[in-house]
Image 1 (cartoon, helix red, strand yellow):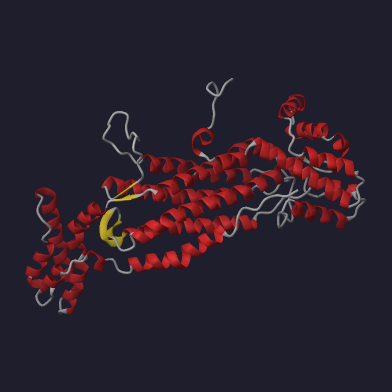
Image 2: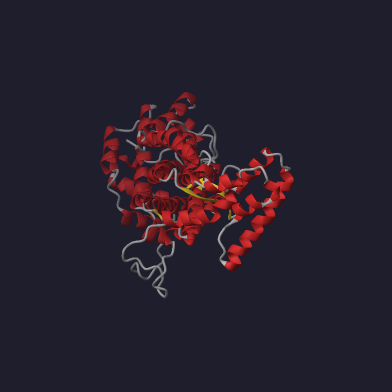
Length: 477
């Protein structure tokens, strides 16, 4: 069948990057299997197993010469993917045929390779988070002192600045970067643990020499550029590790979804809009529309990723005793798609962040409309200072505010709230008129500009610098 006649995942055809797709591609996976078999054979020879130089030389020479058609033929016969590739590798390196996979079980290559791919995929996710932070930082800095309405309960509350709001999105991504970094630091290779995790086959192979078996485990980790191996396991690495990894990806999805959701609200208000191409079509029916389709796509992909940890948790919980195979088909789907979807939504998030359209005139208009309400807290403090009862003054402000809001909504009346308060006897002695004369929006933003610049200086720039100094590690075998 051609590609037009069979299902293809949109994550591969539409959304995820080539880099992330290649990490989960067959060539990468089988290439890692072969590198693991080479690492095992080298470590076994170093421990005393009689493996000739010719065998290792042929394995190294054939490591990337993978005959996928031959492997498919073997798998059709054996109904076992790992053994199919053992035989295919043996055909490519005949002198090594007798030494490939000695003492190992399938999980030696499948699980260790999954962990190696996960490590590289986490590095790519970390780089993508860095891209988002780099794209948002100039926006936060440029608009650090642009007053805008802040909302609680999606109702106008007080003022903040556009830059400060952007830092709230950035703070979430900073937390994600720290969590992904933690997951990378905690990642451990399975090593060579055998069929039930006891390393019995390797102990037999080396005549009961426990020291050699311990060195074998450490040597494989070192050859695969991994700092540690799991201390104990069944046949596989603990599936709890998958649940923790997916939890970190779900956290990234939460952050992207929060930013996208906020931007969808702001685009509805006409204040901040996502990028829109010159010939982009917003609607097939309504040609005038400019829909926030990128943010909607982020929300859609994020919803998918956020629900995957429950799947991984169930898999971890159902791994009976030393192992069961009901994780296999599930993980083949869940792990790649979780990373591919996370990759896709972070690429979108960086694209949106780098092309935001901030409509200052609209923001200023909205601020001016609501600013008298924002100033009432200052009026309340002045009234108390002049000897008024705080609770009584609060009631006066509440009553006038509701009446003004009604008049604005129903009659299109101007906002004369401060004039009403200045004329109310309850505020006699308080300079409410002075508040009305000094309605500079920035005076009502607190430390928002300073908080923004401090956050960029103290948190974001050092983090981005660390990301720039820590490129993904590579496996050298």
